[in-house]
Length: 303
Image (cartoon, rainbow, N blue to C red; front, side):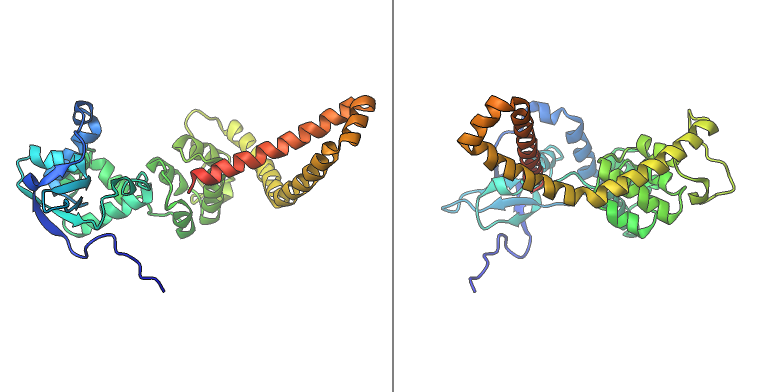
């Protein structure tokens, strides 16, 4: 078996900032951005959490900075003299940020809880993240009353924190249904969650004895939404169950029609005798081809 090459040295190294050479100049617009100021506040309050990534220069010169240009600039602005670094075994800087994603809401919750457990105060965390202390408390208690299955479904999604407050008003099974609907729609906003709450049956609420209250909606409107949601959910599940078979039939039929239209004699006959049928055949072929192209594009974008 071929040995896998390790991309980094196993331990962190402490490197003087004067010996780290950035590979690009940080634009003034970046330094003036809100994101830069937020990171600077975090570094000033809790220090560097994610080490810089550097590589040794050929010939023993200064270290080349592969990842962490903003953190490097902030450290220099703060008057720091050295920092901990990951030492890379190659200089392929383009690989380090290739798969960086925005921090998911639940992951952020776990990060905040872990920091609080280690003794970091709520006030210090609020200053580091440049948010209100009440926001830290809300994110600390984010998953209270939320079903474990919902946490698993939404663990890698960027969800509005208020959405979890809405979910807590529903029983576990309804929470799971709502989470699945949000994933299907690709919509995790609090407004959509509140709409789904309005369409939730009274029996599926945690406090079933208390009438629902959704801002801007009357009890009659919510009752109508309940009925419409029940019908819509039933139709959606039926469509979901038959979708795979329908797509398979469409692919087979479009492939057969493509071969049929590809035959010059048949194509000439249809064009002369039944042009409307030929147009329909071509429309079906085009639609099926477009669906496959879109699906391939979505899969490629997710890799």
